[in-house]
Image (cartoon, rainbow, N blue to C red):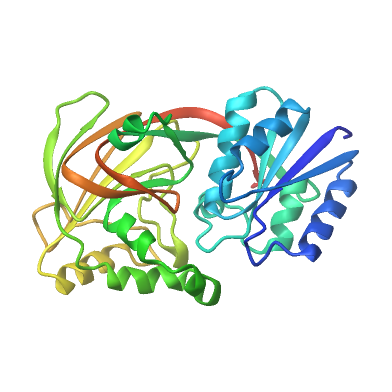
Length: 322
């Protein structure tokens, strides 16, 4: 194969061990890569700049070894530096807690199969997947560009859950730390909002949580948004609301728990309402600043957010099926 491959690794992850690095380097050599460069993320540089530099140096494969935050940053750097049809491929070795990007793409969560897939010594194909671009009033006020989103942007309950999840507990309890934080966040308030999809009329809603997603797969086999795909050129919007406290949350849980994909009761017929929409752009206006997270990173509270799809932005290695 020849050429240059680059691995961008998050050294703060427990799985980022010398053994994993050695194994990944060996698989890349076995796949025929003549040269392998390594770069580490830092608290200030999450992977986008490192990925862009790798592409500029001639890398034909860029691998993100880390959690969802690392994956989204590296995907953004590859997309901005090359575009999906410039011959640069993207691989993921999931080392995070939730690993939602890997789940949505069917990438193995076990490290050794995942690194073989990313390196190319396991059967794979290349899929063109979408990125979401997120603008908010807080980002604009700070002079910051839109943020990339690989998996999901969450407003309200979802963002409070992420903020309440302690890093130390994640290291010991894995994705179960999110379940513990979810219990602590059940009292999240109902947020008044107006939502418009693809320039349509803005619909009034009250919801505990708003999700604007590229994928709907969660840990424990939960398929929260069964129709969401990362390669369909669309985003999925879900406004979730519950009434009567724990009884309402229990009603929502019954609708989403596996083994079946989520099946929601029509709005207004129960204690949990889920309103769904799909499109290429979603705009939400909030009555007051609300917490917001993107792929597990908490951003400044926002009064409004605009999310649009960048179709087929990244060429990613996924398992070959069939």
